[in-house]
Length: 319
Figure 1 (cartoon, rainbow, N blue to C red):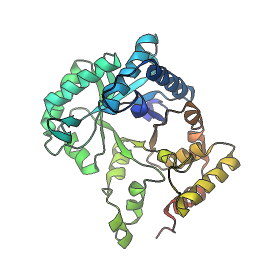
Figure 2: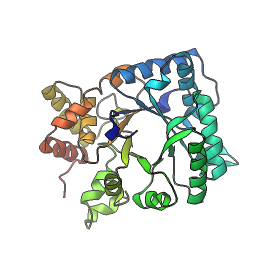
Figure 3: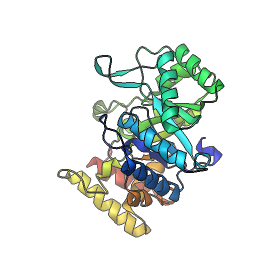
Figure 4: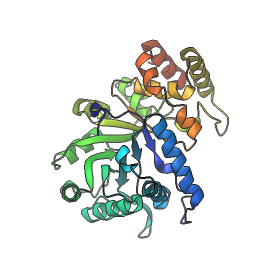
C-alpha cells in the first residue's frame, strides 16, 4: 500500500460525505455527492479513500458503499482505509475510546457491511486508548488478517513512543500514522526547531514522532492539510495579518508556477523529507481538481520558498 509501491501521495478523506452527523438517513443526493467526489478524486490520480466508523454516524461509509455496489469494477481500482477506536454518545458518555479486542472486531465488521466490501486495505486505530492492552489489539488484528478482512495496519493520532509500544506486540508492521498537519497547524514542525527554546513551551507535539516514522518507513498522513480553506477559500471570520500574508504569498507563488494556491499549499507540506501524504477533505469537485499539481509543485519548490511560507504563516521569523 505504501508510496514505495507506486501509490500516489494524495488521499481523499471521506468525512464530509453522507449528510448531517445526526441520525437522519441519507438519500439519493448524498449518494450522488459521493459518486461525484470519487470521480473527481480519481481524476487527479487519488487511489486511497480514507474512512472511519464514526464519520457522519456511519453514513460516510454507507453512501460510499452504495457507490461501490452500483459501480462495477470500482473496488478493484481503489484502496479503502477505515478507522476504529472512538465511541460517540454510547454507554452514557459523550466520547470515549475503545481498542478492546471485541470492539475492534465488532467495528470492523460493521464498517465492511456499510462499505459493501469484503475487506479494507488498511485499518487505522483512530485514537490512543489508555485502557488498551496491545496483546488484545494484536489478537484482534491477527484474526481480521487471517479472515482476509484487513490487509495492513496503521494508527492515527499516536506518538512515536506509543507506536513503538504497540509494535512490540504485533506480528505485522504499522505502516501509517495519520496526524493533523498543515501550514496552519504547525505543531509537528515548530517542535522540531524549538527544542531548548522558550517558545517551545507553546507546542506539545511529541518529539521524535516524525523521526521515528521516517526511520521506520511509516507513512505520515496529514488530515486538515488544506487548513479548512483558511488560506485558499472563503475563510469564516476575519483573517489575522499572518493568515492574510500567507494567502497572498500562496497566490503569488501559484501565479509564478502556473498552478493553484491549493497545489502550492499541499506542495509545501509534501516538500518535507518525511514524504507526507495530504488527506483532502473537501467535497467540492472543483477544489479537488485544484490539488492536481501538488506533487510537481513539491518537487520544484525551493528551500527559500518553503521557508518563506513557514515564516509568513508564523507571522514572525524562525528563532
